[in-house]
Length: 288
Image (cartoon, rainbow, N blue to C red; front, side, top):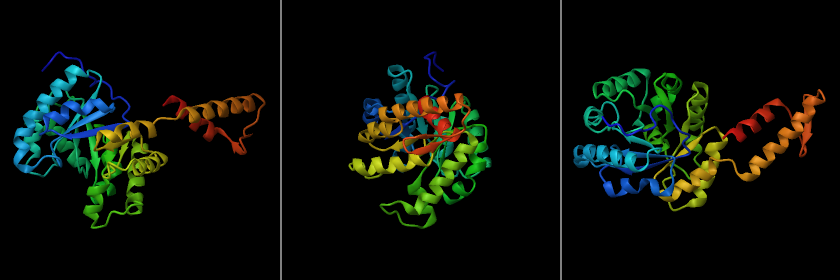
């Protein structure tokens, strides 16, 4: 254990969560440069089977150094899924005390959440926050139960693995995952858990990222998974209210407060009728 302070008693708002292979210390060291709210040292998809054992020690070392240099950064490590040959060793050997949390991918039930918690406890890492990956057909079907587990602090929707599990095909418009994407956002809202939106694999296409992030924000996602540093400022922008949005919210609330003072329950604003739900939305935007 270390006396270095780290934010395990609170979970900061995460608009952007940037991944790097734990097996690439050079990339892990550069993770904070683009300004992400959180980073992930990945032991799963980004690490070849032959490199997974060595990557565990590299993940621990990277977490220690990142925490030393960036004490307020949200730092996670992603383990391999339960049921794989690597999960137990990832939990036992790959998680530093300096982490904010652990990402457990492809969770499908509360039983699996409990199994993950048992593994963390055995490793002496029960204090870590749990970020649940919802990225299979069964995970989406059981998403309400998974996210309502009191140990789940945050979640993400993984569209690529989900559509593969479904035997479907990814398309540019993303309609094939819209229902599942919306189900996960709805379940997260009901559970009171922040949820991060799917990756955009075309990391050189800013317009596509911005458009996809706009859809995610519109259906209730609070941030986005990022696979390249160039996506981080785009995610931070998309999941933060613009100055124009803030100005409009203030103006709307001013009109609304005046209406309430007159004893009116609805009032016209910029050509539309506003009422308490719209006022509540404006207040929430200003709180972001």
